[in-house]
Length: 206
Length: 206
Image (cartoon, rainbow over all chains, first blue to last red; front, side, top):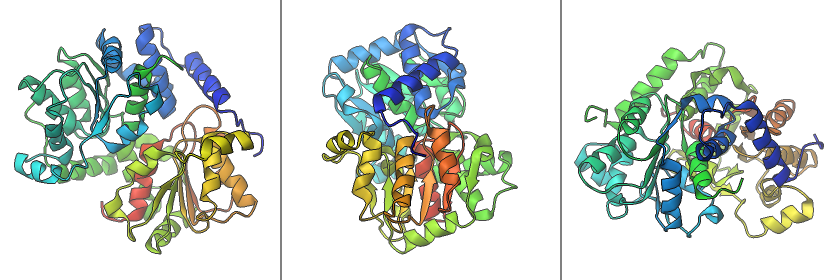
C-alpha cells in the first residue's frame, strides 16, 4: 500500500496521458478536446466522447466571457463547489441561487421545481454569463424558456444535467437552439463533469 | 419544450421506478440496494451495480453512526456540498479539511498530495466517523495508512474515488481490509455518487 504515487503533479500528468492515449479525440477540435480531457478525468470514462456535442464557438465564447469578467451561473451547489477559483481569469463570481430563501416560495408560485425556480434569481446576470447546468433537467428547460422570453442570452451554456427523467430531452432541446453550447447527450452528466468543463474553459493550463 | 415534468416529487418517483426496473439489484441486500438506487440516480448509469462491493454491515454501521451523531468526513468540498443536510438524523457535522490554510504546508512536509495531507486534520474525529472519499485515491490510501497506524477506526468508509491513476488500486486496498466499506470498483466514482451514498445512508426516505 505504501507504493502509491504521492506527487499530485505527476498524478495529473499520468492521468491526462492515459486519457489522451485511450480516448478517441480525433473528431474533436483542439479546444473541445481539452475540455473533454478534463471531463473524462472527472468521471473515469473515456467513452464519454461519444456523447459529447458542441457548437463551434462554445469554448471560445465561454472563455472570452470569463476573461471579460462574466459570472458563472450554476444550477447546483456541487457545481459551484467544483469550480477551481484560482483558474478563473477575472476573479469571476460563481453563483448558485438554489439555496436562496426565496426559492421555495418561488417554486410553489411557479408550479415548478426549486432548481428551475432558482433561475428567476439569475435574471439580472444572465446576459453574457457562462451557464453551467450539471444537475437538474428542469433548470435547463427553464433556462431555454427564459432565453426565448427575452431574459437575456448567455455567452455559452454547458448543458450536462444527469438522470432518467428529462435529462436527455433537455440536452437535445439545448442542442437544437442557436445558443453556444456543450452537452453530454443521454443520461450521463452531473456536477463533477460540469465543474470540470468550467475549469477547462477557464484556463488552458492542464 | 413546455411539456416537461415540473413536479419534483413526481420526477423522483419516476426516476427511482426507472432505476428499479432497469438495474439488476437482485444480488444486493435491501439496504445496499437502496444506496445503489440513489448512486445510480446521481450518475445516470444502471450498470454501476456491477462495480459495487460492500461489507455486510457497512450500511447499518454508517446509519447507526450518523444516528449517534458521528461526523461525515469528506475528502472534497464537492462531496460535502452534495450532502443533503435535512436528511441527516442528528444535525451531523459535515467536514472537509482540504481548504484549511494549514494543508499546503502539511502536504509539502509529508511529501504527498493536499488531498492526503488534509486527513491529518481528521485525527481528532476519525474514530467512529462516516468517511466519504469521492475524489482522491491518495486520500483513500492515506486513510488506510492512518487506520493501520492506530489513528482510529471509522464506523464505515465510502471509498468512491475516481480516475485513472490509483483509483482502482485504492478501492481494492480498502475492500481488502476489515473496515466496514462500500466501494465502486474500477475507474468510476466521484463526488456526486459519493454524496448520494451518504444521503442514502443518512435516511431511508426515497
